[in-house]
View: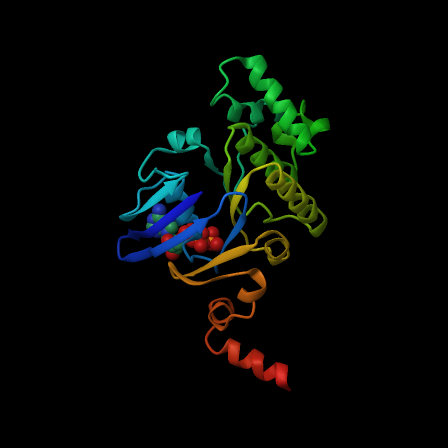
Length: 246
Ligand SMILES: Nc1ncnc2c1ncn2[C@@H]1O[C@H](COP(=O)(O)OP(=O)(O)OP(=O)(O)O)[C@@H](O)[C@H]1O
């Protein structure tokens, strides 16, 4: 569904993304992992059209979408969410979700009906008439997913939707994402919460210093020496192995 090939992005002398290629098959949940500053969000901003890559291509559903602006990519069915959710504070939860629906709906009543349906599907039925400013972090994260779904997108790029949530809230969002996937959506997700990655993603890519260092199932990746070293520092894999034998 998504084919990313050889992305490169430099900021001055810093190579933030270095020759990154990845694939997201339709109906899958794919993780994008890596330590802070690895280049994950920059990949998202390029894929979703918020930044141009220096080189490389992005194909979505067999169409070249490289360099298209975000609203055109969104209209084709791919949308990203943001790490820091900023709802329109003066609008209700339902009106915020409807903002996504306006991409395709011209009629306010239709957009609000779509927003209500999606809000209810995401367990926000009792919050729809509340001001978005009153939402907790967990509520904002749900709102962000609801707004993305309201655009009609089929592929959702989720940027750390679990960040800042307590374990019970993580479990709820994990269940919601699984349900949305079962209804026919596809996910590429940046995530630091390993519990969520382990239980959701079939495969994941790991970035370090802008470059891909591993790709595999979450179970394979947590055993991969290159991944362990990227997170815990040089020599960590050997030390862990020694500790395991002791
Ligand atoms: N607009 C920018 N201008 C200059 N440098 C940038 C810009 N955006 C990102 N960077 C740098 O590019 C590198 C990759 O950043 P990015 O935000 O993509 O990493 P990340 O893997 O998403 O990190 P985190 O997990 O902390 O969100 C970092 O060194 C960052 O400081």
